[in-house]
Length: 415
Image (cartoon, rainbow, N blue to C red; front, side, top):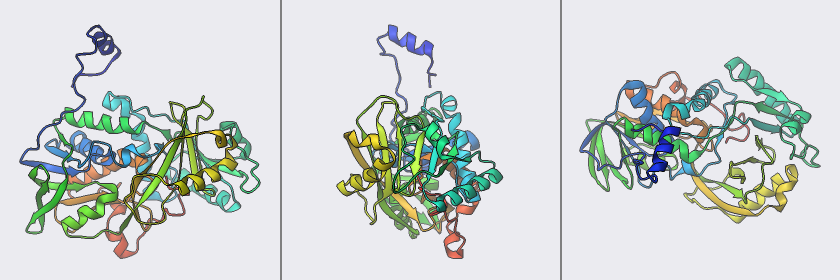
């Protein structure tokens, strides 16, 4: 793989940019791999990358039924933060946030990580107490956050209205090193790095069955034929239940659509991410000037990847009180992603009842921010056969034991 640099750009300019090689190869599948990862989204690609980088396992195939990064990785609002209340959550999200900071250098590919800071607004007295509690928990966890005053919120985000008649801003939980990254670039950077290590990324290849012998996985049936493997990783977000059924077990998850939208581009007016749990909305401004807006997940199970009018009304109506200026903007586009929700709103990183088959799912509405840490932990589990320190608390057995990691309320807006 040729390195990208200013010199390479200058050289190719003289060649009319005809000398660039493909960022990643598109090979035909081999008959057998040491590890197959199903799902070429951010989590699946990160798992493959850290299998190679951390554990030296490169005979790996990443199988995707659609196109690389075409699921939730390309459909989210790119928020990165680690200010979670529960210790296991804070640990894996902080690992992820710290990995994001050097991802561009690791890849030699710009993922456009922007540590612009994230504010989680407190608009009720209950939220004030809750976020102060989280700030103290974060201090014990080694996660740098602080509870800030309404005036400080206004200084950080001048377009905000802190004196709303229904929901005035009473303060906020501020994480200065949180921010955003370019979602497509994260997937492309991981794919390029995996391909450079000799891994096969196989797109337009749907898994139709999982084969096993003696209680252990032996391979997968796909639309491009049978492929054998010694170990299998299932990393398919909202379709995890479908793959689990093929493998002969059930998961405690449900799939729903999470919707978002962007406005027409405008001049820079907001250089932080603001999240508001009381009105259930969040907003940031993209590098192209669009206001990126999102809210809650749909209230019913579905596999829809499109938006709905009622969601626009509910989310935008709530945010207009806090950001009056957006009432004049036109919507540019709207979309949905299929998220996989557990009862405690925490992920599953675990071995499964089928031997040598491992699963990473249940990230719900917070998957993008977790990509590097999730891949790190899942690769460690697949390579070693058992969860490591980052993943140990997120096993399937916790639902049977009643040992929940409850982030459904503690995390506020769980994005």
